[in-house]
Structure formats: structure tokens, C-alpha cells
Image (cartoon, rainbow, N blue to C red; front, top):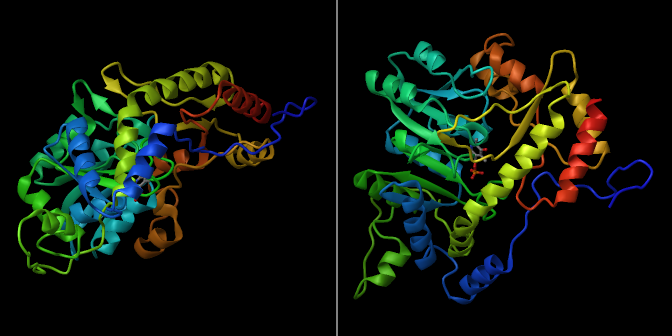
Length: 386
Ligand SMILES: *Cc1c(COP(=O)(O)O)cnc(C)c1O
């Protein structure tokens, strides 16, 4: 729907338009009718399918990725006096969970081309208080896993992967989470696998998994589903004051269906990605970095950067005016008022990230975009940038 004179869209195009097919809606309906609204058989099934998909022995369904990151840090006994290394270009949750545990997030600079955490900067930031590195596989790319694993091994650090953007990301025949001690995934409404609110924590450690299960549900020795499933009346015990982080079967029903559709939906993401790359090649913009042939990029976000001297904020104003949803992923965390105020960071401390943070913007990239909508986005970006 365009204005025939200006070519401008008449309806606002949401940044991450959700769309569910009939099979997905039916699965949720069945879940609603099943009698298990909360954590039950569908959560178990989703956990099994997801663990297999990423190649880990255990997956725990949660209410969010944030809960998964928090649990992982907590299970590694990170708390007051400890430091955790965090790339400054990430969503706030990655650093907030460190604060919630009373530990200190130490922000590091990113690679100037990819925005990914820089192994070199990680190594420079290590102190005797460092316990873990939060590795963010930004936009669906893969961080430099071998270098990070090597640093973690030499300094006895845990690697916790923030895979919120990286559900489909693989390197060679391995999922990107393979290099981490634990990894958390997000199924938030705008993510590649979207159930509204939800997340998953994966690990290969049986002991870690069992403790995570207990901690995620009030510290109860057995969850409701386990109690229901064993014979006779089951007493429960509280072994620790746990949290309330469990996944619902309604979310799991949708998750199971979305997992089946991920592969085809990634093909569509790639198609749109390539059209954007072609359409913007001659503009005063930096395109998203190329992906090496051994990496499957989840292509979660199509993030452009303005070249020196061009105002990103004016471009965003222009796109909104053209009725195109857009977003910033992300503002460098060390410059936000809480983190700069608490730890005294200043502009100039992490220059690659700051240049990124000042110049980046993301445009709609979901498999549900029609060809016409993709054309609208292209036309609007070209109009605004030119
Ligand atoms: C979305 C996101 C999260 C948080 O995910 P939730 O499921 O909403 O808790 C964490 N890290 C990154 C990089 C994200 O984009």
C-alpha cells in the first residue's frame, strides 16, 4: 500500500512483524486444551528437541534468556568480588545479570568490522578477580570461539554464551554454543525462534543441569511435572531459595513448531539479506560484514552503519517518516547512565564500540516480509540516505 505520488508506504511496517502459520496456532490451541498450562510434557519435548538441535546433552526451558544467563552465573558461584567480562555492544540483559549477582561487569571493546567481542581485549581485561566471559554471538554471527576458548582455558574462566541471536548459528559441523560451558537462548517475540517470552539454557554437564532445574523452580527438589509422573504421593523439599524461571507448555507448544520451521525461514532471511546487500551497495553505508564460508549465520538482524559524516539519527527519523520500523542494536552499555555512573566509564574508553554505537541501525528482516514490503524498505532507505 503506497502513496502513488511519493511512493511512501501508507501503513507503518513493524520492525519485527510476527506471523504464525495455521500449524503453529493449532499446536498452541492443543496445548491450551491439554490441561497443562504450565511446565509439563510439551516443555519436556521441546527441551529434548532443542538439546538435539544444538548438540548438547541437556536443555532447560525457561521464561527468558536473561533467566538462563543469570542461572549460569549463579551456578558458577559468581558473586560479590568477582568480575565478568562483557562486550559493551550487547543488550542490557547481558550485563544486568552480572549486577544482579553483585559481581562487576567489565566492559571490553569489540571488533571494528563485526561488532563481536575481541579476544585480544578480553585477554587485556583479565584480573585475578575475573571468573567468566559472556560471549555474545551478535546479530547471528559467530565470535572467535577458538581464541576465546584458549584464553578461558589458560586463565581458568568459564565461557557463558549469550546465544539470543544465534539459535541457528553453526561453525563447520558444530553449533556455536559448543565452545561454551553453558549457553542461553532467547525466544522473545522478535527473535528468530519466537514464542513471545521464553528461553533455554543448554549444557553438557548432568550435575549443572540438575542444579539449574532446581534453582529455576523455587529450589524445590522436584517440579510439579516430576511429582505428577511418579507413583504415590511425593513429598517435596526446598533445598535452596530458588527462582521462578520455568517455561510454560503454551510457549513450548509454539517452540516445538517453530524449531521445525527454522531451516526454511533462515532461507528466506538469506534471500532478503542478499536483496538488501545488492540494493545498498552503492550508498554511503557500511553493509553487514561478510560471513566466512564455514559459518552458518543465523541472520537475526540486518544492521547497517553510516559512513563518517552522515547522521544516523537523521536516517532513523527519515525511515520512521517513511513508515518503516527501525531499531538500534545496540547503544554501547558502558556509556549508558547506570554503567558510566557506577564505574566511571567515559567516551573514548572503548572507541571501536563507540563508533559502532553511534553509526548503526537495523532495518526489518523477518521471513514474513513480502517481496513488496522488502521493496518498500529498499526504496525508503535509498530515498532517506540519498
Ligand atoms: C533479546 C536478548 C537478550 C534477552 O533475551 P530475553 O529472552 O528477552 O531475556 C539477551 N541478550 C541479547 C543479545 C538479546 O538480544
